[in-house]
Length: 513
Ligand code: NDP
Image (cartoon, rainbow, N blue to C red; front, side):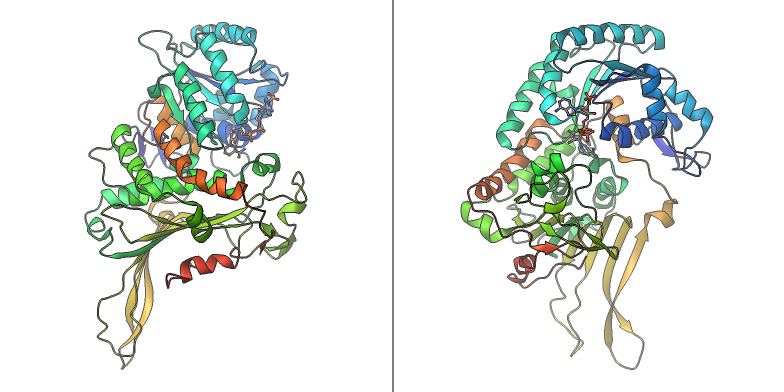
């Protein structure tokens, strides 16, 4: 994250950001440009960068996909996904400035001839836009296409920087593999074509302001870190709950499930940021070195502990927001007897000096009572209660990642009156109140970082493999067991009942959703 380049300004448009120095000129080749991610997330993110002057006029986006389209068709379609009406950034002049930089290229992802022509097209764009030969390839296709594209980029010589002064980088979307073996294979394929320093494995959670703020909160302040260990912390709960169902992504989700889609990536990222040691400096190597140590310290699951410490679930029909919604097996594109997990809760142990004996409870799921992503630190209670008859109030600190971005510290206070009665109260910091509304889209932050060559918020080959190493025994155990009695939680609830036992067995309980 290049904090020097992106600063707040009173004169900046909505969102409060602009770039002091525009990024390097470059061509971005977006594979899968006709797809859902490209339309809903990537094009708006690139527009956001252009709007906030992070991308200058010396930038070209070349959409690449099999669908036949002209430059005009692509540009017109892209325009439909940019802000309109009262939305921030809805300025016609800015939009047409951005859309002028868009081009389209139709080809097959495994066709050497298409990539030879792509190389030529990039040469033309280089001279037309004075792009300095800098190239960013964005893999926004389904994962089965990744290795074809990488192979063809290598064959066409596009994997190497064009000159000593230019750069070539590649962003690879999640999921990076579907288990440890496939992640290793993909890493091998990627690293046969690119140097690790050119590779940016993206997890868009890390582009969120509130996720990055976890680092600032922990390492930019002196008062919290001394408490951040087994001496003061009783347990940690990390929740990534979605209210939405599987939406348009049933085909993908059927082969993924919550463990692969959320725990292996987003939730373990949050765990690493919560549990890591302070890096010596804020750079890609130092930060990523500390994050991977957390993953390596997590006690591996065994055949026995999977059944004790991991609960999976799948939603049935229920009510969300007062409206009836179908169960997972009734969603279009889902098998009527699907055994896919739409919910996972698990208990982890981070076996190191800082965290020994502090359980980490993780949960994620679709169609839960409300959308909520948070990291909750539960502190130990006071060692001796001097106020007789009062409960030994415990303190908690909750980092709200979304939707009510902020930080909340709860503690016991004397309630007014003659007696010494204790009542829990909170001290709240809200992003919206402190910094105004609107934060930069996560994808915009990360694409901007990649163009600047800052890989701090991207995954390294070893950390992706470490996360899969942790998750693999769970997948293996589930594969070899008969399917659980799904559905086991109604849409709109807090998840399967059995989840409560996971914490209750330790005398703890989950925070309500
Ligand atoms: P899509 O299914 O929309 O695919 C993107 C494009 O790839 C399609 O428009 C199509 O373009 C091409 N494509 C689709 N299927 C195939 C196939 N079997 N073989 C070759 N080409 C194919 O995917 P998304 O846009 O949803 O996702 C892209 C990537 O981003 C995936 O890896 C996904 O996991 C990841 N991702 C997506 C998110 C989302 O919200 N959509 C969120 C996080 C990650 P054409 O036919 O024109 O070539």
